[in-house]
Image 1 (cartoon, rainbow over the protein chains, first blue to last red):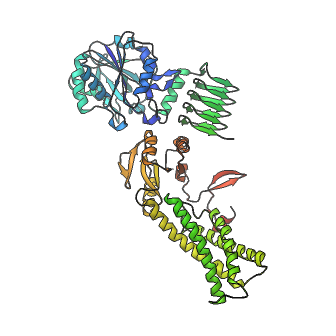
Image 2: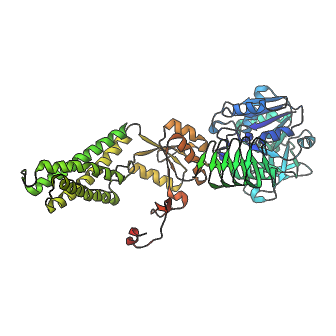
Image 3: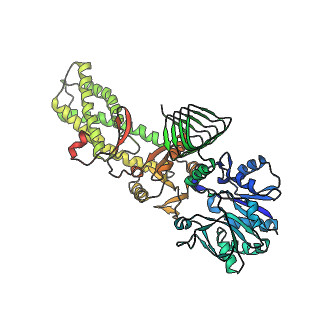
Length: 316
Length: 267
């Protein structure tokens, strides 16, 4: 089996944090989101990361710093959001180009998975398999691919972003395509290259058995500012994670706070904040903020803000 | 280069018009002769000297501003104030230089003539400036951020009024389906900001929604030396009566409750 991580999006909803880096490379609890994912993939399994032309350098750098063998980067020729191949399109292109004939573990690079992938893979019995999470709210389920359970672990139906969901069990960005189904994936990708959920409807239409795996551990789909902060809170808990190279003086940290490399924080109050690297903050009160690299803030109070790299706000 | 040239011509012609208005008032009052009681040379020397502080005062009213509507009553009022001050300058300068005073009617006529000609000329210059600045490649390409009902109305208004700020591109944080709005291309979401600023040579950014991105847009404008503007409706201000005032020396945006017209002077 081979792992394929989808990281070709442009993450426009997380602008400006994703202006110069891909969403999977955003830090979460001290390391990039995608690193959390890669660490869960069983040792020895080859991993391919698919990204776009705009963020390729960032991934190369990240991969160079990773202590894992068998990593490969596939760069799509896309440079803009309106050119992207789509999730299935990327998979199909890679399968075609590399003549892949193996079972595939597909992961979306902007998801945090709390469960063990080894446990998930043990549930694979040769049929397409997806990890499903019970979000317990029909309203919230409308935004996801909804799994309608059948007998045992069989999927009876799959509803992609339905108006009236039949269950609260939603598909996460973690699936297995057996090698026998790759031709179906390739054909379907020609018609709906951006519909990863739709492939399960296609499998069911073709009378192929689809199975699901449920888990109770945390799962986070990091697609927006709020979900990014939620994921941060979930992982960090009520503590401050301060990089050893950072200087923090006379500062009160409440809730979940991460402070990155070479930051200098003084005389401030931080509540549920993510401070990236090389940031200087003096005499500020920040709540629910994500402050990107190299920002300088002085004498200002901010709430619910994502600040762009190098922002300078100095109130004297 | 077009704007500095226009500005220079505007200042020069305003000064010339000031001299001409006073010269005309002189002849209108004393007849089409050179009076020995009020020597024309002395009178015009005082006018020429006074024209400089008059022009400086006029500039402080921001009547030469890029976006000033020359036809507005407020602009007319500022020009009238400047004309009153102009006649005061002329009278004082004449008194200091030549120890004399002159006809009260001449004072009134020169002030009225100066005000009327200056306002008329400013309306003409406003028109000329728009024509020159928007012809060919616009001098002030403007980026619109955020697509709302207000944005559409504004784009239409700017086009109809032939504004010197020419919208050349639109970005929206959430993205919109339309390819263009009122003839202005929609270039995508905010991840295209840097590219759009660079490709279009943007000089002004006008934010019409996406309030949560104000700090980041301002940061980008500061970094590129671009003028940032914010539509009041983004803050929920729809009265069309907002103003930036000073509260103990600190700038604040003020929206006052509806009251009689006279309250405008005292609020």
